[in-house]
Amino acid sequence: MSTPTIRQVLTQLQAEGVQLPPYDPQRVFRVQPPSSSPWYVRLFAGFGAWTAALLLVAFLFVANIIESEGVALVLGLVLCAGMVVLSRTRSTGDFLEQLGLSLSLVGQVLFAFGVAALSNEADVAALAVIMLQLALLAGYADQFHRFLSGLWIVGALLVLLVNADQFNLIHLVIVGLAGLITVIVVYEFELLVSRWWEIVHPVGYAATVALLGLLVLPLQTELAIQWWGFTAVALLAILGIVIWRISIDLALPVAPLQLGIGLVLGVGLMILGVKMPGVAAALLVLVLGYWRSNHILLGLAGAFLVFYMSAYYYSLELTLLNKSLLLLGTGGLLLTLRAVLLRTNPESEEVQ
Image 1 (cartoon, rainbow, N blue to C red):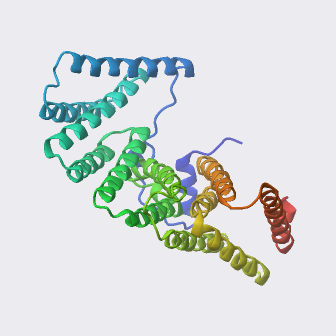
Image 2 (cartoon, rainbow, N blue to C red):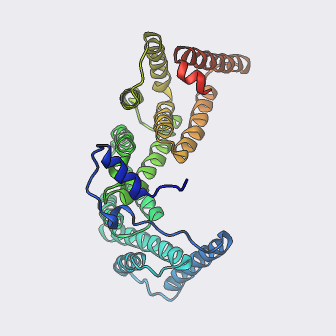
Image 3 (tube, rainbow, N blue to C red):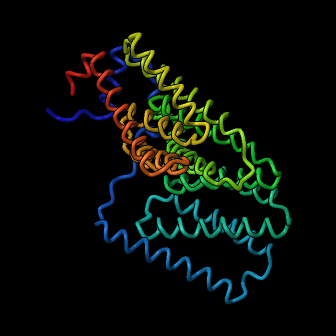
């Protein structure tokens, strides 16, 4: 039996009564063809492109072409605009793709440097960077470049908060990132057939990396950031909404015992999250990744969950023996909860 095409699957879903957005092959099936070059050829092409970009930048400085901040700003904009045009051409190969990416990043750095030097204000530079990255999100047709643009925007937002001495507003950024990830994953199928998917898909990964990375900050005790309990409660609330949405979509029956176990785990996670909210964020990403069978989200969530749990146990003021016993008890509790959940759900037990 041959594998059905995407168009055949969508046609069958529409025949079964599933409501889908209007079919537009220019948007839905604009897929990059697989590269015919071996991986090592692409690796050397990328290395050569980045080397060429670095040599070009070195030449610009050595030859005193960049003599002022204004020249750096204009040259940065020219590089970004030129690489946007290059990314839209269909004849680009591995070398040109990597060269365009590297020169675009050089242009962004020159632009940020020029704006910061001319204005002498970090806020102005951060706002200018955000505007530039929003334009590049729409214009530069490359997934990895859009991923980097998402990280640029988060970094610029942090600069605004730090410059305004509003460190505690970072909680709103963290909760906003968690909400953005949740919306993208929950409405993944609707976005997949829309023109926005090519943008929101890499932005979602950037938001995930930024979310899990920012929650390392509670480990830095010298920072004047408080109210981590608010972040933990908000993340757990989003996690609860996601679990509720999954149970509705999959028509999963919720037994009283499972509900009680969920409440106990929620209280335990809330207590844990006050000191280490990264655990709640990692669990949120883990549930979302498992729901959509997204191995990238599962890998990120698993790695950060192990890191945050290890950091939490390391921060406890206990002896090594007591920490070992606590780890042993935690593992036993998780295995017990798994056995109870499988027993209360016969279908899952049959699958196992």
